Image (cartoon, rainbow, N blue to C red; front, side, top):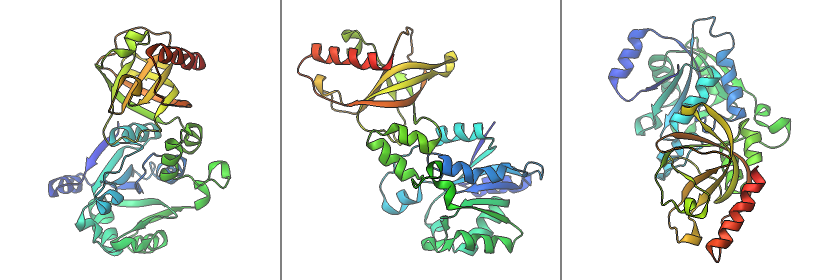
Length: 315
């Protein structure tokens, strides 16, 4: 079972050192844990278990871009979701490094010595070819390799070609995945992620307008930091882990529901050919395809007819 460790106090660091754990780590932001990220992760799993090194992923909170810009950054994979994905990959620890002024001001050498060596006890580090670190991003991947070798820390650098979709000239990146989702291109996002883009949330009580129309919906409470795709209607598959029910066909709407005077963006899903009480349950929504943009209809009957057509496309 994956453990989440946050280094936010001297106590946590001291407890870690007492455990005398040594690690093989993948280092970076890893938002999305896309196919490129997975190539960076593979080397910490290969052979290092035999060396008795704990495979761990080390990332930063908040995202460095959020720290420097002062603007909240929406995430493809909030911490809970990221941990679930990493657990399936075989990672044993998710280590969160608070990104603050002190960390940002460390020189590349100080970062290697104080963070990687003393705090994390890394014996092996894997990064992407474009990895930067230290004050004003002065350190590059090759610098990390050179500095870490001084402390007998082996560094793997994953080449740029591993960040291409099917070895084509489409570079996988978290920002390109966000762009694809913002345009409703969920199939392209899937190609880069290696899985359907997911939205996880707890079912909460809504206004029951869908039920009045004959299409009851589950309204989801989504983590506020979760990145949502383009507003509109999607064909999706739904997992209900608590009921051990998976891949249910459904229609999802992301938007403000302008026909009924909605003002806030909500996520609601209508499960096809399924009945049951979902209140309080956690759902996993997997985006399959974008059906249409959100639209304001002239009447509820027109909206109902359109929902019927949307559902037929997902059967």
